[in-house]
Each structure stands twice: as structure tokens, then as C-alpha cells.
Image 1 (cartoon, rainbow, N blue to C red):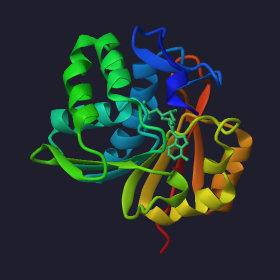
Image 2 (image 1 turned 30 degrees about the vertical axis):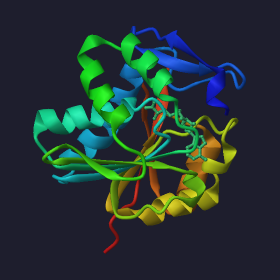
Image 3 (image 1 turned 90 degrees about the horizontal axis):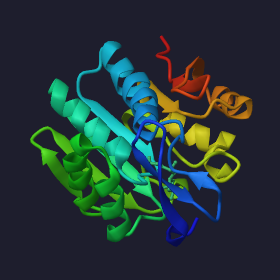
Image 4 (image 1 turned 135 degrees about the vertical axis):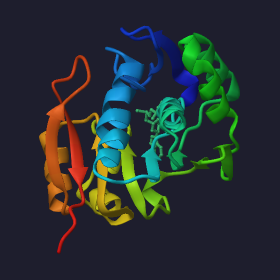
Length: 225
Ligand SMILES: C[S@@+](CC[C@H](N)C(=O)[O-])C[C@H]1O[C@@H](n2cnc3c(N)ncnc32)[C@H](O)[C@@H]1O
């Protein structure tokens, strides 16, 4: 997991990602990093929850990585003018040099917001704008103190690389941190992950994935009456 073994790659939509050469694992889909983040986390996550009636959103992300999801979420909230509170946790933060290299390779229209999230301090709440608060936590998601979320972005490395973040026990923790009606979204569509989500009490949908991926998962903590 050592971030010193990272190299920048260009994905098929032209947006960059990192490849961890020791693990053979990328931070985003090689078929399109920005496309994947937008499809899985913004459209199937934030937009879905807002269409279901939530106005202000409280988001928790597993794996801050490059900050792409955080940047796209902030841009989404800014463009639609809704309050967003975004908490994210990262065990192996990129160095400032790696962040700068990533931002310099990103599409021009994303560079300013990526820069804003990358320079936000660790372990403190910061205001991106009047209505957008970002808290980046340095630490292990296994011990993360998260609660009261509307949307959880499960963006850990794949189960083969980070199995500890996809266990039935972690699914129970994710379930407990969501408000009733809250959702968890992930790019991963593996059967074992879906079953672990169901065993924690989630109602799970397999929905169309981003380019290059047939399906993704959206898990809802349904409101019981
Ligand atoms: C798929 S990448 C996340 C991509 C990121 N969301 C983005 O927008 O660039 C997975 C991230 O999880 C981090 N990670 C791995 N194990 C972790 C753990 N136990 N707790 C928190 N973060 C972890 C990795 O360092 C990596 O940055």
C-alpha cells in the first residue's frame, strides 16, 4: 500500500489516476476515472439521495485517495446550491508532490476544486464555501468514528487488496452509521460483497455500472415503520 510505489496513468476518458505498481491496483477505473466517480458516487449516490428527498447531505467516504470524489461532490453541491458536509478517511495519504502531479494532469475544469480539497488540512474541518464543509481524517477506516450519514462512498481498494474493509462486520458498521433512508454506493459488484451488505440489513440494488463495468451496487438502509 506504500504510496511511494505510485505512478500516474491516463485513463480512457483522459482523466488521470494512480497505479500502485506494487499492488497492480489503480485508484480509479482504467476505463475513465472521472467518468467512474461521476457515475458511481455523484449520480448513483448524491443525485439519487437528493431525488429521494434529502436536501442537505452528509457524506462519509472510505478512501480519500486523490480527492477526486471529494472535488466532484463539492462541485456538485456548489452547482446545485445545497449544503454538503463531507468526511473522508485515508490511511496512506499522498504526498503534496504526488497531489500536485495528479492535479497538473487533471482536466483543466477540475484543477481548481482538486487543489482546494488537496490543500484542506488533515484532521480539521474546513470550509470550501459557505455551505460546504470538508473534514479529511488521517487514519484507518477500521477505526473510523463515523455517524449520521446520508450517503456513504465505499471507495476502498478492491476486496482482493483490502478485504478487511468489505467484511460483514464492516458492513454492519456502515449500516449503523447511515440515517434511515441513507445509502451506500460502490463500484464493486461482487456477489460476496452484495451478500455481506444484505446480511447487515441493507436492501441492495445491482444497477448499471460506469463505462467498462456492467454493474455497481447501491445499498439502502430502508426506513422501517
Ligand atoms: C480506490 S482508492 C480511493 C480513490 C479516492 N476515493 C479518489 O477519489 O481518488 C482507495 C483508497 O483507500 C485507501 N486505504 C486503503 N486502506 C485503507 C484503510 N484501512 N483506511 C482508510 N483508507 C484506506 C488507499 O490508500 C486509497 O487511497
